[in-house]
Image (cartoon, rainbow, N blue to C red; front, side, top):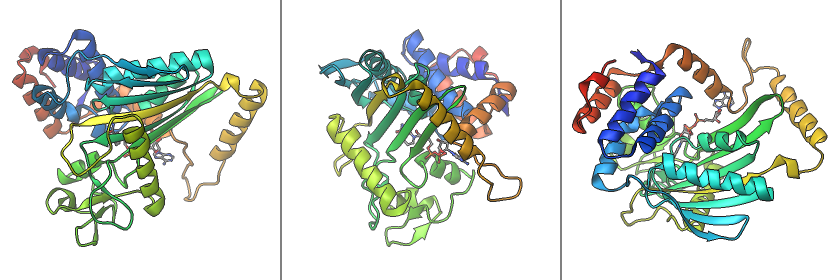
Amino acid sequence: MKISVSRLGALVEATFEAAGCGGEESRAVAAGLVDANLTGHDSHGVARVPRYIGWLQSGEVEAGRTIDVVSDHGSLAVVDGNYGFGATVGREAVAFGIEKARDLGVAIVALRHAGHLGRIGQWAEMALSSGLVSLHIVNVAGSTLVAPFGGVERRFSTAPIAFGFPVPDAPPIVLDFATSAVAEGKVLVAANGGKPLPPATLIEADGELSADPDTLYGRGGAIRAMGDHKGSGLALMCELLAGALTGSGCSGPAPQRFANGMVSIYMSPEMFGSQASLARDTRDFVDWMRATRPAVEGGQVLLPGDPERTIRAERERDGIPLSADIWSSLVEAAKLVGVDPAHIQP
Ligand code: NAD
């Protein structure tokens, strides 16, 4: 089935409001999840509603939280998300960094103890809407799923990283990915009969490589880091920067409360060299990349951010595709918190 963006957003918003979130907070959480579906990252979209409601009910995530500024040294600040929803405390932290970078030219904001920050590219897009270059390095305390290169035991989170770079008179570059070979949501999708995993993305406890979701969910295996030792090194740095440096906490052997940590660096391109040469170099380079001869007949070289823009245009026009299972899980979550059945129509 397909459902319009507004109808899906209204159902999700009503679900969070009935579960105890404020109106603005519910709108922000719903908008973040629907936006992930709009960009094609269904693993970070409304499929997460039941998990978010469970976290709210167990106290893992708390409604109505705002950030506290822990320290502020001008261009460097640390803020605490107080285990509020990532959609709200993440937005506040990013707005804080944007404001600083617009004043100072550069800003680093370390966010600790945020609820799930969702699709990290959304934060790079928010900085881009103020004309800023940005980099966001993230870890996930309480979610240890990925084995370091050469090992078979889970040590890292799927630790994502995102960059945004404006391109004058053209769409921006938005690079946004988990440092694991696949995001966990994709293993979950495969486990539920959806798109199979690429070969050798998981590793069994005995070291054998696998693409069988049971490796992760049934046999104590792990997701592999992307790019062998290089991706494993990147995940390690994400844990140190976003977990240790922010004070949010790295993954570890003891049970931990779920939290995203995020170090964000914002740069105003206006503070770098000549605006004319920056615009020309950026455009020339992007054009040169796009003009690469494709590897396959009729193929096309895409740049980061292109696939999300294409899917967004399709889904805004045609609606968001949802499997029957995801729709049932949304209806169940809505009923659980007492949403008026009038909202529950496909
Ligand atoms: P992915 O493997 O789908 O890669 C996405 C990136 O690659 C995007 O920048 C996209 O524009 C680019 N891309 C895709 N196809 C391309 C092509 N053909 N040519 C050029 N560029 C292309 O992403 P993923 O690793 O599965 O991550 C999915 C999402 O999960 C991300 O939004 C990430 O932020 C999110 N995530 C969040 C958390 C969290 O704790 N909040 C944890 C892990 C992942």
